[in-house]
Length: 316
Ligand SMILES: [Mg+2]
Image 1 (cartoon, rainbow, N blue to C red):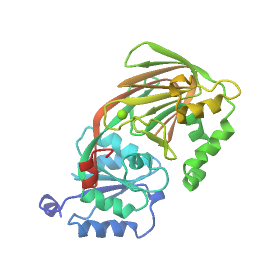
Image 2 (image 1 turned 30 degrees about the vertical axis):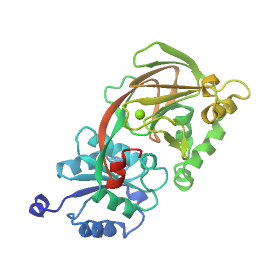
Image 3 (image 1 turned 45 degrees about the vertical axis):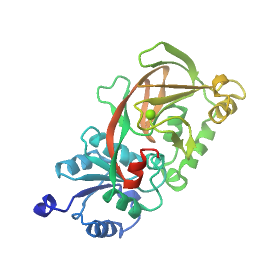
Image 4 (image 1 turned 90 degrees about the horizontal axis):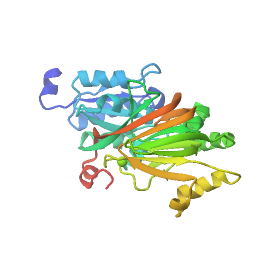
């Protein structure tokens, strides 16, 4: 088999979250697809609660996989990407379950897993940025691809019942958010690219590598996932109509005049808070902290997607 692999047949590794697998026949369907496309039998590596994707991605690299397919939600994608970034080995996306924000941002269909796998096997490569996040000066950073959230947003994730999130997707976050609405803004200092501090009383800071963050909502309309720039928004609801102003600022036209919502962009951002806030990366809760450093890693990740999409450009 190894000889065949080093001959014509290429090898795909599928790192799959079994909880999100569409059913018993799915593995056989992917195997049949690989045969059809002239690929070797795929490596099938299931994630576990203890190892949600990184160990499996390392195993895939060691096995010499030509492409590592992350089959699951945004959590699986983030764990696999954390290993593949900087290696040049391509990641394919096989979106399962709800969410799938990176796939949606890249225009990859989320309703047809086998179709997505076919696109990967016959696809071409694009390079996208990743963002490295260090919480509370941790030596080891965590990569994320879609968004990081401090404060309100992460608190929402932490308080959302897992089962509910799977059943109704992003709506669950909104539901949890409503329960959370009364809250105290926290004094924050934000520095972009080591520049002067912007001071704000914030309820939430979102850092985006992509434009579309929640439920198809375009939080950063100008964001590109391949421009070497990260985008940040600080949400500062004030007074009785605080959250109303935030929503108006996010979706309205007078964003510059709305002090409830401040947009910033750069290659790195440092956020220093007076009180610890909840923290999440691509929808996974990471505890709480008072200091966050995020740095864009331009073109860190190679994504294999349909050849026509690759030719049209990342967001074409
Ligand atoms: Mg960008």
